[in-house]
Length: 240
Image (cartoon, rainbow, N blue to C red; front, side, top):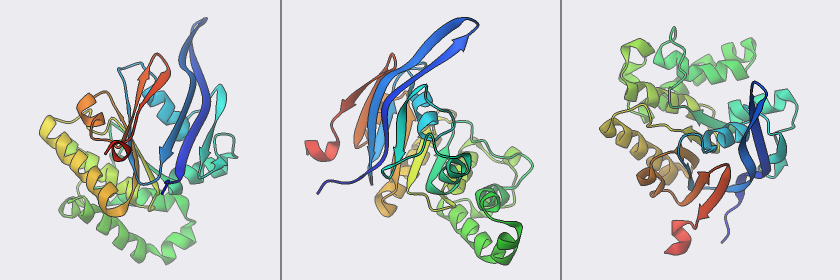
C-alpha cells in the first residue's frame, strides 16, 4: 500500500546575494517526504541541503516554487499559520542544539508549549504539561538531568534535550539538520539509535540532513544534493 506524502517541495529555486553577486543555491528542486520513513538529504557543505530544509520548515522562503504539508501549501501561508506549523506540526533539531542557556533542560523542553499557549491555558494545564515534558526527558534518558542548564551538560545530553523539546508537541514530522555533526562518533551513534527507535516505535517521519554517506545509507530513501540539484536513491523497502 502506498504511504502518503507528508511534506513536499515543488520547483524550488533559491539564491543568495553577496554584494552584487547572485549565488544560486537551489535550481529547481522537487522532492517528497513519505509518511513513516526516514529520508536522508546528503551532500557536501554548500550543496544546498540545509537551505532546502530551512525552506521546508518555513524558516526562509523560496525565490520560486512551493512547499506543501499534508497536501496544503505552507510556504505562503500567513505568518501565524507558519508559526503554528513549526511549533506544533513539525519538530526541528539543529546541529548546535539552540537551547536557551538560562533555562534548565526541563524548562527548555517546556518552551514550545509555553509559546503555543496563552498564559491562562498554560497555567490551567501546567501540571499536565510538566508531566509530559518529564516523560519526554525520560524517553531520551535525561530525566535525572532535568534541573541542569546547558552549560552543565555534555554535547550528547544537549542534543537529547533538543530532541525531547522537538517531541514535546507530538509532531508528525521531525527535521534533523546534521544532528550528529557536533558530536563525537560514539555519542553520535547513540543519537542515531534514538532517532531510529522513534521512527520504529512511533512511526515518526524523519528527514535527516547529513554530509555522512554512512548515515544516509541507513535511511529508507536517500536524496543526494549536488550543485543545487537532487538525485534520489530508491527506498530500501522497495529494493527488498
